[in-house]
Length: 312
Image 1 (tube, rainbow, N blue to C red):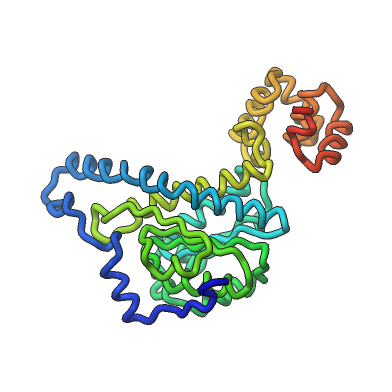
Image 2 (cartoon, rainbow, N blue to C red):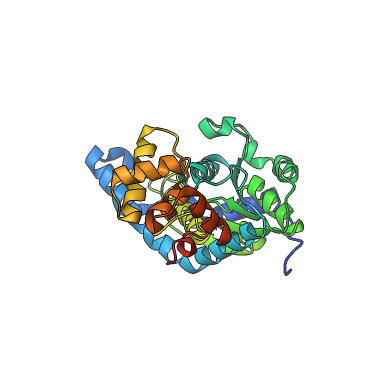
């Protein structure tokens, strides 16, 4: 693999990269931020935020390649592992946490590591993002394999925790992906797939929780949603594997079944109860007018492929 032995940047090198980071530069439009009215500030932020979707759009080919890699890895028994520090790590934790209830996946399938551990989700942990040793140790504990996909999220592109994790992942043969807002930085040399949504200087200089963070959220949404759709965790554009954890979601499940089958909510409720609250089984029952046992057999025969099970 070209560039396999990429040396970790030294502190002096990192300082040079800081000078070149677009996200660390001052935004001319917000130089008088402290003198603006409330409306002027929020209008400025809104104008700047419009640039985020355009920056993400330019990265669609790279995002699609990452989705294909994630799908291929998971089909071979691999996992999707996000990691980051600070705001970037929190975005990663959020996306990973949403996969299980939204797509009914195992908590092991999509994971997120944040520098500093759980404490860092709600507060700053001093020096955590500089911990090279922690990054390697945490991935080692997860027994990384060649089928895993490791996604490093770092707006700056220079976070030592992320760089060390991607370096270790490469050594283990895992597929590496970088999500950053600064293209010419060390992280781009460590990742097989680089997603660099360059959103420009922040309204508040260096505060990458803003445009850079919004770009990260957009990209993570695309990665997880597209991957799960390709893996069959949705039917049409409906959450067929949603976990029914509360009354609101239970009602949503009934609406999903009614919408997908063209039957009444009452019929959906009866089928879901007979299916042991398995939405896939219930949908096959409703679509084909069969009992739960036959619906389960059809799903088993098709390897869980809903479209094939209902003959679509």
